[in-house]
Image (cartoon, rainbow, N blue to C red; front, side, top):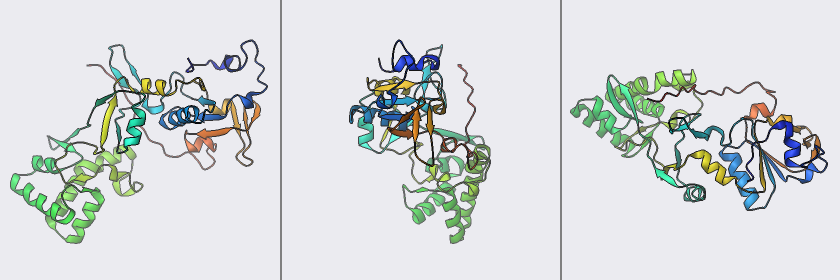
Length: 306
């Protein structure tokens, strides 16, 4: 089996000579080094090894697993847990879906979210069903007609665009609705998640959760939506099951790989190396925080079985 967890104390013996730590010739052992074993790194490693017959070394910093942030595992109760938060697979690409289907069966799944607004649970993204749940039928109908008239049925409208257009139109009803949705759905969540107001976020971030002028309660509208039947980790293992792929876990790539940014020269395990380096980790770390740390934000997950 080519997928191996390697103890760094024995890494040279593991990969090069069973009876020696001599690593002369290491530059010929791997054509490609991939840093990171998430989707980007794993797919590239699989394609390079199976299509181009390249010998690939994957270096993964996390100690117990491959898969990056998509890693999942079965807990003591037999439940499949997404360690770094829920990951719902979705794509509009038939090619991508068929490619991944070589490594997994699928469970059809469409993600739906409810938010508690003024004591009423309504779909998010905010849509026409949300509108009718929160406002009297006559008011909701009037607002629906105005929204469809100005934007079109089925349109997905960024909340800041809705506010801007409502102001430009001078329609007090649409302005009131836009401000209501902004305050109840976007403002506090955005402040909590990003510590910035919606207006301060980098363009495009807020557009991921638009106001939807339809009765589609799905969080995503991609053509293909599903979950790997046996989890993401199993998918990654099958993807990387190739004798030309070796994996080094629990290893910061800088412990075994040196990159001279100015000259482009690379050494692997202390020896000059002329292969291809693919880096999929945090870009600020690659450049040794030369321009400071990027403001990555995440959540702290606490798991409890009920």
